[in-house]
Length: 330
Image (tube, rainbow, N blue to C red; front, top):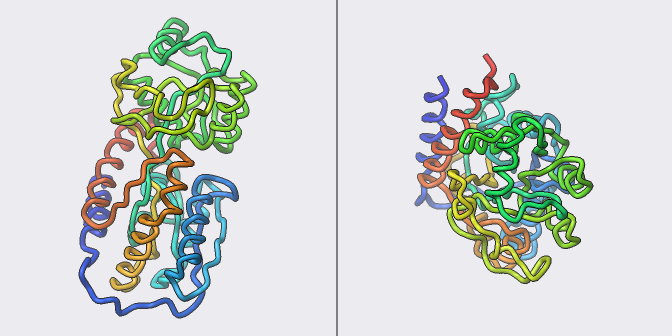
């Protein structure tokens, strides 16, 4: 059933026409449905897209941002599903669009949405307290292995991205943590800065404030390549100075979360093409490039077949963890 669902979603992405003439235009205000609360990563994502569209007059109609962050984003997807056939509802999320239904019984499924694009990839790092004795990721992993099930790894939500990554690290290294879920990455950052937990797996933007203050420090990033060079953040080091986790000796090369955009089911194909084109123009703007650099994300615009293939790989990798951890709902 899971494999069928993934194939169906991939097929839905792949069949979106790429060369059709633009017959559709919005005829009323557009609603950007944000599947997170105000101030979260998805909220910032949607609002920067809104501002770039409006500044550059890429859409004639006004755009209203609506936050629906309850249930790890499920509230937003249920709200978006209710707009079936209406291309004036645009849903902003992550891979939770296709992963949440694995771990909870929800009133939506991936087939309730039409995929449009992914615009960026969030990177994830291992962070420890600024006063921790670990000089690198290998030393911290060895410490966790020496005291299995005693060190605390904090993260945003349970059975979500951060806990999934923690499970992957455990499987790859043999280390074991107590996973402590919080309401968001901001709280996980605060708890690590106060040494109430031993580590977290936050993305750069969620921990940068504490890093600037020297309250936390990054050990490695789960990316095939180092992050882009930047101005120093703390102690003369910037994002590009952080080793990849593979460099640090961890047998887990990459873990990245897509920033995704969806429409409700049964919208016109040329409406999908309209938003693909608008979002691609956003991704090429100087404002978007500045946002990507400031938040230390990886800018990567995907649509059509490329998006479909990414979803299939990401779905399979996460589903494997969910099944191993016993999280899949029956």
